[in-house]
Length: 135
Image (cartoon, rainbow, N blue to C red):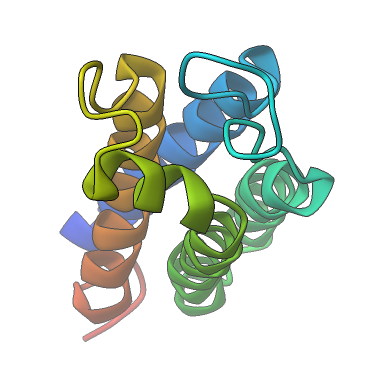
């Protein structure tokens, strides 16, 4: 069976979500200069949403439920972003207000946001793209 563009977008979203979840786990959700409550944004649900969503989407691809897999690749990173924004509100505020203006955003923060946002955007593209088995 010929694979459509949507199939490859689902795979890309899975890979990006896995990378974001693993990266977040490795850096332990700590961004900024210190490990205070303002720099520590770790929450196990963020990792579970990213890695669990990618695993679930992989299982759905294996059972040929491509439409549902694309929905999972959009919803799981989207929910992870929402929870992450809730957890890192004080860190972002510190940077914008000027408490941490000398150093700006930690590169680890930018890498994680980039990976998660790309996983979400590509997952959204996959929702509307042609997948295998569609006419």
